Image 1 (cartoon, helix red, strand yellow):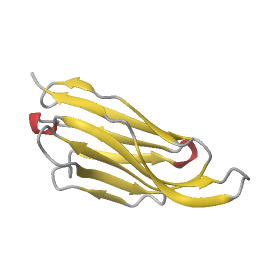
Image 2 (tube, one colour; image 1 turned 90 degrees about the vertical axis):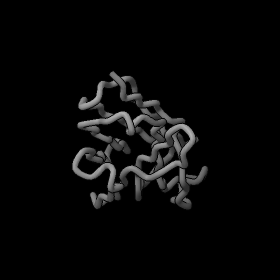
Image 3 (cartoon, one colour; image 1 turned 120 degrees about the vertical axis):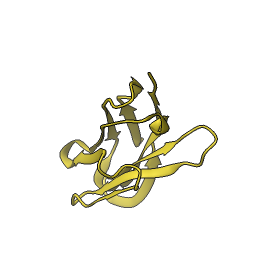
Length: 125
């Protein structure tokens, strides 16, 4: 079974920093893209940042200059370093990945998209 496990959420003061981590586990042979999305109360889920296995990154305008996404392909892990956080960054942050998964017979199967369970980030004084 393939899954994403997030960690690092919590309460942080405005102007502070927080680092989120997400690790993919299971019979994986590749992670083509990993990303962070967020969903604030009453709002739609939105992309925060994404990174390909080759290191190409993409950021939402709200994240540019403050957040940094990085990955460790060997560990199938993605990180989101959040600096200068503001109350409007309060949301549930979800990890997303497009993963290449082995079949039960051990062959390389199709890629599938997987979501984490979400981790709450609250920015408040």
